[in-house]
View 1 (tube, helix red, strand yellow):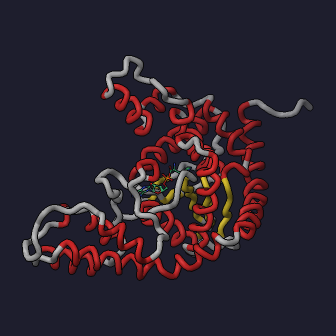
View 2 (cartoon, helix red, strand yellow):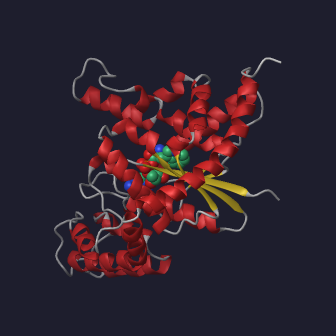
View 3 (cartoon, rainbow, N blue to C red):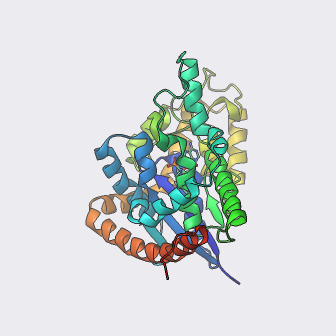
Length: 336
Ligand code: TYM
């Protein structure tokens, strides 16, 4: 039986946060440990430069995202672990896929639509004001990432489902028009995990600056948790899970039984302050050992680089084979 392929990436625009961890990093590493899987986990730095125009931040974030993957248990012996920009074949594939992607499909992408809506809300006459092509065609680059390594399963948070569906669509179009070369990928969502909400009540996101970073010190972590919004209900008053985003975070780090107990405690009037202490302790229990590894890795960037270069070597050799087939299928090959 052929092995199942798992692939996912994290954009290098900031320090990884709890949402990245529960949405993608943790499920991807669990999947990578299964006997019957081959895994491809990477740093999406070409995606990073779409929204972030600060070179220093992109560079520092690349180190932080790589250290996070490794600290969370990625085993580079089992997983092909690489930086997107070290695999130029992905960009070649990106162009070929761009040539067959319907513009209408890109018009429907959430990130582009949100940027258009933002312009309209601001009364801009040009709905595309300041929207760059990187943002517009972002899902095609993500498609190239996924198709390049024939991924079956793509563990992502719910905000990325649309992009994986687009990858499937584009793969189907290529297969139909030229040759059955691409595997149709599927988004894998951790059922117990919702999109985590950040400190300002919007989706927790590196680009909103509202995150709880994964590996801050225990003290800082508790401080961040204390900032999560709640309502004004007093200790002793019954509380519902949907009254504060802290519940979904608690749930993402707990078993079903622990979540049920927490729900009951809130219903019994647990004070928000106490709930935050319980959440801080829960997060720390899971993250503390990984935090220690993260700090060691962050102090040794050359070691990380060696691992990434070895991963790129493996990944490129494989990418080249598929890319040659793709080029041939569209009519690009040497004259004989
Ligand atoms: P990025 O860097 O925005 O996020 C990385 C992963 O974290 C998930 N995530 C969340 N999950 C739950 N709650 C949140 N608040 C939250 N915020 C982020 C995301 O769903 C994602 O799975 N385009 C991708 C990176 C990428 C990629 C790929 C992923 C590039 N190429 C190929 C899979 C396959 C992105 O921007 O992720």
